[in-house]
Length: 314
Image (cartoon, rainbow, N blue to C red; front, side, top):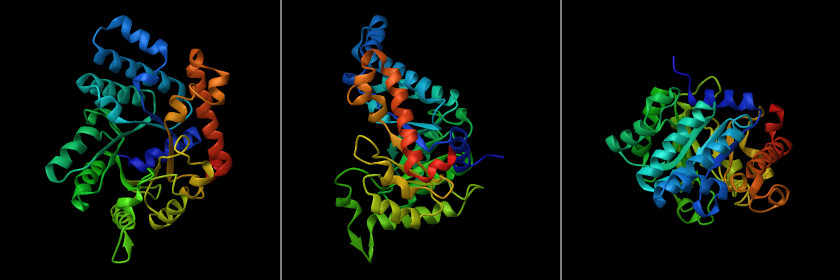
């Protein structure tokens, strides 16, 4: 019998005693010189060099964070920029993360209808069995803009494979409200999406009390985050915006239930590139960038434990 995504994620969160999620956002101009140098020693083509450097960078981060956190979130766009080479690197990174015992949320923000949506879902959502899909991810971010029939094919595949999807509900970017806040029939757009997500997820909850359909809600809007947690009690949350975007542990405190579960909090740049600026740069610098990654991950874990109910996990 397939174990649900939410139940697997909660088990992983309990095992690692933290809801911290490490994003994997490689940017070529920001990579450590040793990583780029290794790629250039083996390859001549600039695109192949970038893809190989991305793969090595992410794998080395995975090696550091795998003992510390339950999951990672590779951002597909950074890999896709480099075409087939980049996409192959993304696939390898996802598979390496899963082999390392991590759950993987692929941040690709797909969205379509009918058989096209189903094809996206079958390509990305491996769920419990990493071999069940080409990309091999446990979960995928999804855009709901085309309507409810955008979500149904993704949800069906997720239920079949023990996978999860995270629907964009209230995103962390500064102009999110321009499309998400307009009111019609007494509800904002994001509230209407949230209601549909709660209904669809609540229809198939696991032993954790949460369903396979999650929601992306930004740490940069703590008032709305609290509101949406209450409105979506059966929905696991993915919270971007912590760290570099300005969100704090106090801002995300309302996302968790009394057991410190129900949400994962993402930090990408603040961990990936912590060796470039701030106190970890001063302490470690580029020569010890992996130590900076570890230190910043541990700092985030401690911050969430101190300021949210995730502290009960420790």
